[in-house]
Length: 635
Image (cartoon, rainbow, N blue to C red; front, side, top):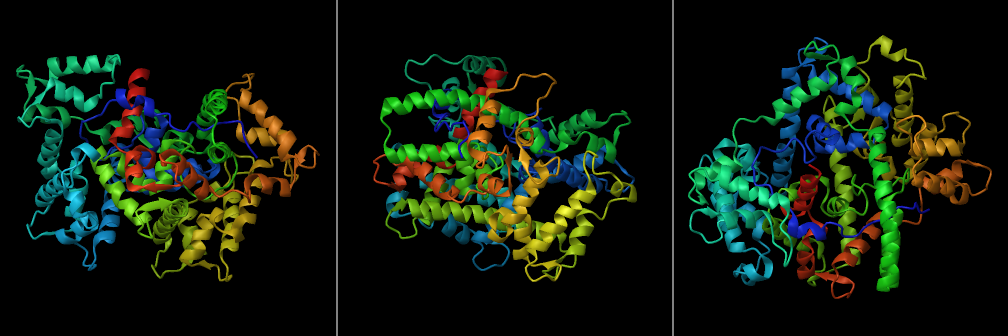
């Protein structure tokens, strides 16, 4: 069951030397996406994790949930959302990650469970694995020094510890982990940045140090145009006193700019896009009408899917040439084939490794450390990212033999996958369990998800753009299947099956039913070729030429999906398509990571190999440089 799309193993490596690092410090970004894009708006409005969840929803469900959010934003309950209410909501989404990250870290480090972190607890969790040999200065071998990292953390800890008692409260620990969010931590951010760039330690930053922090010159490589622009920026704007160097105040003006409020800017943008009658407030109807401005859905992904199809199809020819040229080993070829299968599975239901495109570095990062942790790693310096990756290696190496084999790596990825599902379920359960008794009744779920509806909302016909009646029926059927003991209530384990049916064997028929019902427009119980193609592709304009990959999908339907050659997919054929039994996503990802990082081909990874291939496993500022460069060229 292979779609003709290909995975390009390491596409960002070639850009590593010419990529640009952004040193400007802002509060927790509204989004890591490109400002002005729909993805940026979605993450700013919903937060990163919730935006990722919305991306997976059918449009009807996405729109229903957006209606619930609109009611929550309307804090004064006047039926409208003004600029202040929208800004407050976006600010809440922005800060939610910081709060949840600190809470998670405290839970992991707080050994005596007193709700605060002592320096000794932090040190043990972060540096307790470090040996005396590790403590030696090893700048040449690993690019970082544990001694320097500890000294940096001690200084940051001291500033975050406002009451000077060696303990950090939850709020103080937030400022320690995310100093860019707190005004009293700005000097620490400045000092750390300054020390990092000032290679000769003379207390100022020369033009060479400034450029060297952003751009790693390749041998005989031509300097990119943006580097020349940065040189001009240094001379014309950064170096205010024109002495050829940047002092601390000049660096402060550069990395800690004043006068820009990202929340206010995003609020104004969303109001401008959605306020159809220009009365400076949004009605619920206006928000729903501009659904794609606020949240993602399967519909908004179609354009991205089409673009990826075209890009990856062109890459297929290149990879075939490479396979012929390099005499790839059988196991390596099998790994590539597994990833080709994984890359474009369409409706294939898989377990939750990542919302990113399979085969990309973003997918690998989220599969390896989890979604939230991957986002956190992206904000780290390469040195800090590598240090934390070393800690993770020790945790994966359960037998303590100093190497990580395929089984240990697969088990770690499976654990990461299950952690996301568990954490997501716990958060949703707590939000819905109104009386906090540890049992979620159907009435509690109904009140949160449908209780806000008016009589006229229920009267919308089945042919309307979305139908609450249809959504309610779907939820009732899924609830019934998840509720094993039939008491019309869900324990947290049952609710996990309700939220993530793809994770549970007993819920697979529900997944199959929902997929068929969604695609089977004429309700004959079968999927014909038109229904199959229409679920994957809808032209933006009438008469638009069909992309090549759609023709390939037609062939896939005829030759492989339609096993009995009757021109339609029956229930068994759809099951074989979307619920394949012969594929283990965690195993395939483990094999891929080994293939990318096992330099000596002994079928296991040493710590040195994992650290050497840091960018394969986790995000960091280094991995963002390639994306920055791409945006620079596009601009």
